[in-house]
Image (cartoon, rainbow, N blue to C red; front, side, top):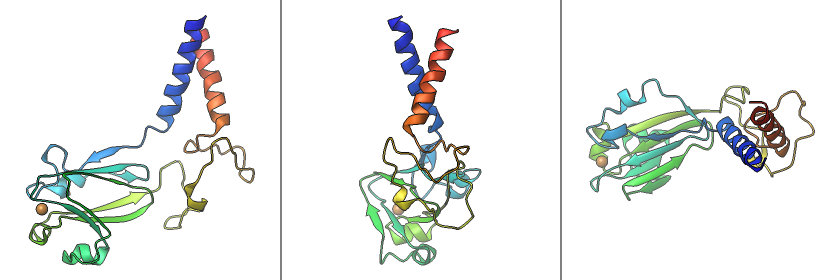
Length: 179
Ligand SMILES: [Cu+2]
């Protein structure tokens, strides 16, 4: 009995987790890392970046990573850097849809191709109009609250509402007890 309860709780957590496990951590260049020799264009092939994903830059002491605006990216212009790091292990969270531009802080490396342009799309559960800013105020989702102005038929998997958690644990219990 106690075992079943534990199992259903575990199952519920696994289900909840998997509904949101689409978030991916991308290691730039995979095993080659963020390096002048890495073919970043090939690495970018067939990759789609969604909000919630994370970019991981791993690099040697000869490199760094800076996020810059589009114009600076094109010209490898290192003024007005948005954010920068040189600790060899840097993550950038893709929190909103749009364009992100990264360059190596060494301008010669950047000119040699050590630069990365990432197009971030809204997580697929929210189809929304293309190019329109998200209408959620700051993306703040207080736990346990539900939006009353949304049609009840469209339950978004992005929002870990408590109702959803409750439903999931019921489903999990059902699976455990009848298997
Ligand atoms: Cu470099």
